[in-house]
Image (cartoon, rainbow, N blue to C red; front, side, top):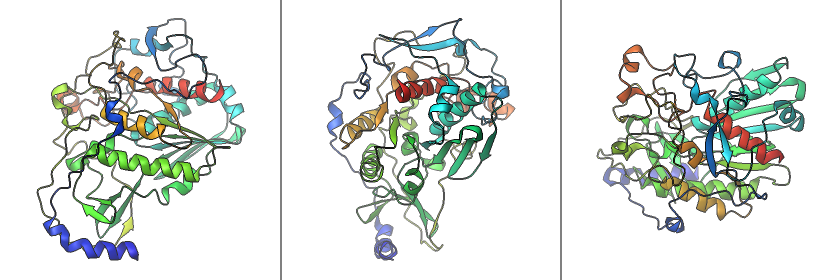
Length: 416
């Protein structure tokens, strides 16, 4: 009732609202423009510094798309006509060590009776499906069960009592629908977190949704400190939301039984002239229309799926991943502007009482301009595929593909 009263008390003010510009002087702004390695890793090996090497002897990929029980059409590049396969023969080689080979049976046995949960946006779903494919390939005769839902979907390996879940929460903080308007609540995790507490391994991610605008934007108003705004600086919003998430994890997750990971910002490969809607997050969108009267009752609802709106948006930029077939070779520096979002993620995690393990995959992923679905997505029509400059998906990743390496790194972090 207090929330409803607060909302109505501010409703009239919305008619005179101007976009809120919140500029936070983040302590992360002084961070190096080069990528960071995870300082929580106790071994002498820097897992996230290295290069991509082609290795014909290493069994890549770790599974065949046709034998995986769960790959969304958006990720299933080979099924939808990708003609090349050399991108599947590269493995990540850290500078001072070799990654242990992924052993799916070992993973299942060590996680027997436990739950791994990915929480976040479609990049988290990308990684979730990858791990299911990797484990299914290792145990092809294992009995399984798939429970599909929104926001929670779960794939169970019944013979091991082990579950791999995906909880869809693109912002990690709450999005409520009140009187027909979606409210992004930067200071609340709320009921989302109830489902997270029971997991034995939690892997969080966020990033891309904070910069969505127009038909892709997942909210109508931002709620902060009891007030409602039509917009605000997107990096500032991310920082506040990340700090809310970090405080919730510190106060609600029993770290003696649950391992917490944070998957770094996944880079896109947009044309640099179109960075205004990339993950860089430097431009604030200004709402020019006054708020309309709110008449519908309040209810909770998931935010919209970015793929469902792709065909209607006019904001998709020219992409430059189309036709790419090999990784970037120069590993001396970050290939392009270092994502500002990653500076915030790095800062917030460092300030946690018990920091999450940062899976700092931004740099190694940025080298894989060849790893995106491009036009080989099940979401695209023949007409869209014929126009890759405007239709290619250079945000998500093919399966099999790069997310398999993310999971090899997760496997290493968990068991080595």
